[in-house]
Length: 545
Image (cartoon, rainbow, N blue to C red; front, side, top):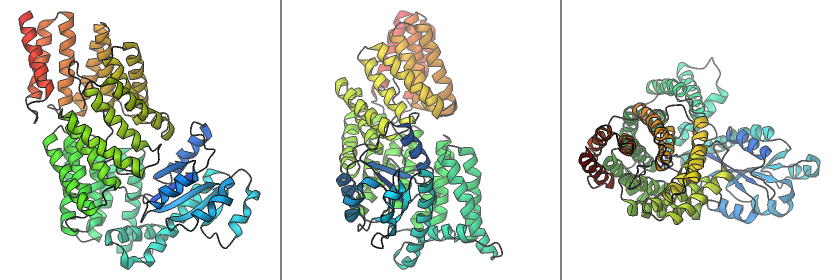
């Protein structure tokens, strides 16, 4: 949690998500998780309501979607892949010029021609030379159905070359086949495996829509079935522990998340080579839980273990390296080592610019985090520029109530606050809060961040009762969401103390400052600037008593 040198201001950085690039949560075993969908159309208007509705439907089918207007950029992007299987939606108007170039690419598994008048493009579906073309479509729902069928066909093709495939991947493919083909007079073992697949996939659906308490029992039932059907150190069991850990982390039950991630890691250590990327995933996940718990030195150690494996196992511009650079930057940020954090965030951005299209939401995350460091270092014009770059991308890439938009509004508000433009700051913070109220449950830490920052602006404006009310709302949420010694609680105690100080209620102010100091003194960073700030406040308030 990023904090300024005078008033403690919360700036939530984007958490890690493996589905895409940013971090290492569980890879839910969903049918279409391993595929990429690209939509190429020069006339796409990403602000159009019909387009946004189409994207929403597609995201219910395919985990990762990229949008391109320029055919050359699209082809160059696809050519960077090695093993990914890509589904392509292409505008009918592009077929004559683009189809001969893109159809031969090995990365392309299937092509869907999207148009308003099907009869104009029927020829492409009838030509033997264009075997990857699955049809001519005028509605997105039909494309979704066809994509699911293509995904199944792609898995069947993978089975043919199973001798070349890692066992854990082959295992996943077989389960997908079982859930599609199972007959209920099969053997008990097969029924067990089919039941595992069903439970696991239902859990994934609930997790992906944020219904974590519903996802958990399905993942746990899936794990119990696996323990009966598989050997104790099978990689699939490690993946189930990983999925359970991801759910617990999303629910902010960090000790349970840590336990599940550690069980996953222990199995992977036995089942996989020492430099296997899945081990790096486990270390990244464990590091993220420690970061959430405020144990930054342990988080840093875990992230560095992940980085050590990735530097051996992966090419130097691999997106997973960007993930880990981002995670290390987050920890240095929280420890107050802003120049180190900036260095890692810039490494993250450098890889992202080479591997992602220009409006990819992960680039927005990178700009956001770099803006945070400039803000912490007092370089507000650079911070505002980075945050605005982030927001511009998010508005194109994400739906209107996505949490990452709230992050951008929050951070822009923080810069305006630091620049003394309080009305602009308050407007940005309130936009952030409104999105978070829609996107999160009522006790989510992000709501605490918004209330904290709104309180900060009211304090600066001299409206102390409004400031105190907002700070107290923030504190109540944090008490539910965090452990008693989490640094975020120190932020709230310090801010409430400052309001009482400004109101002349010095005894109350001292009490809150001392609560903040007690937490800060347990921090693994004894030289963090907030410790000196709180100690200074205590000395000043004692002189007023």
